Length: 405
Ligand SMILES: *Cc1c(COP(=O)(O)O)cnc(C)c1O
Image (cartoon, rainbow, N blue to C red; front, side, top):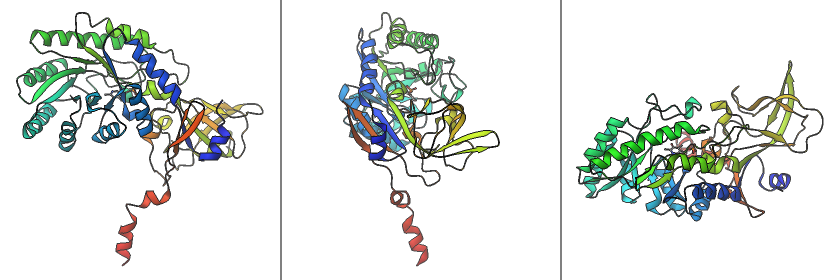
């Protein structure tokens, strides 16, 4: 049992807690689901880019899926070998491409023909051959929230099949490009298997067409997106997920790659926050806590649901909105949920907060970011200090000193 009071006392609130044993168990489940083939699980670093979290997964054997050069640097700092790092994203700058090539990562995932030309040019300048994959947009509706749906032509991600084929042919004919992979990622918080299967089928067929053109794809990257339990969703089992994908790959000699973020971290993390006040406006009951949208923006951004539990509840539950101190009406964790009466210093746990929680946090309202703690083998350890006010102003303070002179 986790002693939340002791943790709140020791580290302060608001606080992120990550169960490292749960992360390991999620990783193992997925890895084993693909055991029929060679596979590489590349952790999507953007879900939670704390160095200790990355290192934990890297130690288990994971690679890293990065969407900025900053994430590539984090991955390498955490010990990920270059040959297990991939670099995706619709808008890579020249300096990011150059550094990724210098770091000799497994492959750069191209998201447009224009980007292919930049990568080719930079590789030529460097006198090397860049390993690439192409992100195919299979035009499949993943049936998830529009903000986290990425596999439709209406989304900015990837290229259509014809463009992909053109890129592969050009790459094959370029001494500076080596097409080794193919990639798709149709969205996040996926709870339906059919769209994944359909997308995999489309992309597998493309691999067969490329084979006929003597272009040998070695890495078949099915992206991330496996959904998790926020509010009792019916989930895709890793085994069924793997089987659905493997079923589309008959006759193809490829290493399967996947890029889970949320699946590994989401349910393994919690956000601990203290009650400051309760109040009633007309007939609306508000529980005001010390965490806010700057710490965990998912409810405000996507109307995402996170279960919230009050430690040691007493009395009858009535509807309440759990809100933070930030000056925005959109600053809420939950609206009108049943909650027993609370008092100053009570602890609330916002569940399923391990993915896209801390990484999306900001300093809005000059709020220092929360501390992060790992729980492993019945022990707790700090993995990121609570931010301090001095750090928030460090890059500004010199300039007012100057103007005051
Ligand atoms: C965000 C993202 C992922 C991870 O998505 P999850 O839903 O967290 O699994 C994987 N691949 C790419 C390219 C992404 O952009």
